[in-house]
Length: 115
Image (cartoon, rainbow, N blue to C red; front, side, top):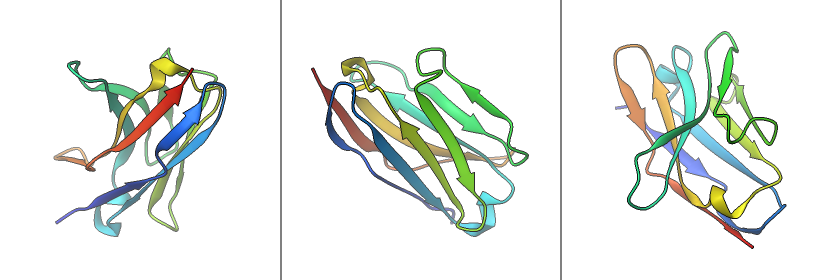
């Protein structure tokens, strides 16, 4: 069964940076679009950024220019570098792998930005 393991969340002051990592099972990573989503309490999960196997990237307007997604195919890992963090970025962040047939999710990592 596919597994996604996130790390790197935590507490940071506004204007600071964090880097999230997501290690995926090798069997799915190489064929999957990898993405980061986030959800605030009581709201729907929203796309933050995603990167295809060919390296095509999409960002949510709210993070464009501040966040950078990348993938290391040798390590089966996707990263989310988050700079200039704002209090409104405070949410649980989830890693996603989509192989075109199934969507796999990590358990989430909390990011808290203090003002």
